[in-house]
Image (cartoon, rainbow, N blue to C red; front, side, top):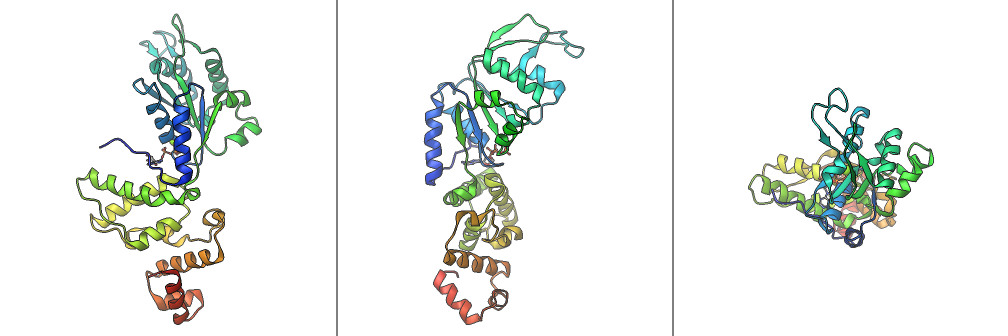
Length: 312
Ligand SMILES: Nc1ncnc2c1ncn2[C@@H]1O[C@H](COP(=O)(O)OP(=O)(O)OP(=O)(O)O)[C@@H](O)[C@H]1O
Ligand SMILES: [Mg+2]
């Protein structure tokens, strides 16, 4: 499998890529914030691979899955015999990273006691293994990611504000996919190509109505949801063209009118009417009589609107 590419066609994402390239050359800590599935891990990787540290290790600490029991030895490492289970010495993650990058994934999930320990590491740049003789200087660059809730967590005290500000020297906000809809199609095509390449097939086409449906949907699960949708559609299509039959109903249905999603883009009334008609047509899988009935207009009026909006 070829290395993953970072797709960025929209203006918003091209600006993000510029920012990432600039931040990649710096040494200061970066905090990447954004909703679930927007590409925070992908951005962290980009920062590393475009940095002078690219040939050094990239070490992830998954803060959401660290049990209280594991945190200390993950962060600090331990000497042999430091505690009952410590049968061999083990370096901590910062030690393993050397002069590379430590990526603190989902840092907002770190328990409050561990936040204090991390703050000391970030401040002192020194680590001593548990039970230990070995002290070393942290040479790794620190990149962290956090969900959209991190600011609330800082405000209500469940995330230490001193640590937050230390990590957020260079802030990056990865936008929700609904805020860069121009990337939906390039991303979809990229995921189709990858899915096909993985099984040694030529990439199938996406029909025009599938493309319209993907564009109109608000993608609450962002790029990850788009990727999974495409991979499932590819499976369902069995190598042939991907049509509306291969796209789940909730995507065809959840139109245009969900106030947290598509409406947040403030479409014009015409645009909204176009999307609602398109979504209704998809819902009835193209049945004109049924669509007209749902929309409360005559078949003739529907025909005229379809012509006007170029919906066929
Ligand atoms: N710009 C992009 N181009 C191509 N693929 C991308 C891009 N951004 C994200 N992806 C893909 O989308 C999926 C989700 O991305 P990623 O895991 O980086 O999101 P995340 O913000 O870290 O998610 P979470 O909040 O769950 O941790 C991954 O499969 C990733 O490879
Ligand atoms: Mg992630």
